[in-house]
Image (cartoon, rainbow, N blue to C red; front, side, top):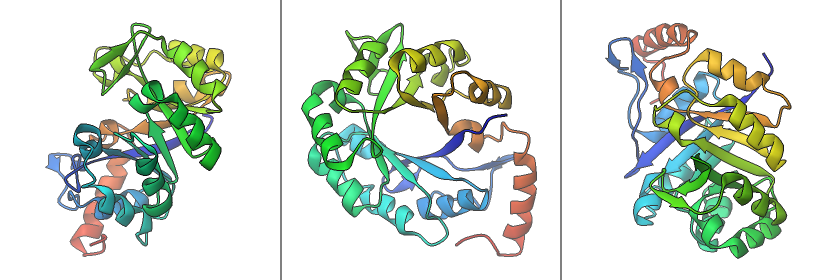
Length: 258
């Protein structure tokens, strides 16, 4: 199977993780809501990149999670690329995350639709490797705020507009797949990648190894990365049974990160 970079999602509220790793019969005793501890455990499991969703910034434009984001980025035993999304509305949000809090790249959703000049400025200052545009797609319309707001522009039109501003990567969410209405529409996602001419990180909606393999094998290979969240925390991939057993032994011996 061709390789995909897997971003593991950490969703933060009030400085804590919303999701915890589950064992066979419930939350794993070694998995806590401390985001730094969670990030260290994920790194032990060979996580190569993190996707941090800042719910407080998205919902209230609150900076409550900024310290947690920085702690993850600076923590010994983590030190992997970090992508941050959720509620990034202005240049000060972007600068703080990229220059002070340790984010390697940021993803903007609503701001890209409402303030294209901001995107142009960010691309000019930081380059296209650090700026990603989040596009939520359903019924050939672009949505924002986790699908709550629909806009009268298609995802493809929006992506092409962003490309003209210098954007090179889309964080693409198939809302129907993420919300469990159906499995991810891989031909549609692939077509979007081809027609937009953009590199794609698929955000959620991949729940099985079969879907992951199909996504990795899709041609042409503009889809090079994927964000996995609940599917990983719920142990939907066969290899995770080995991880849980190994972690249980480490926990019993007091060898997991504290």
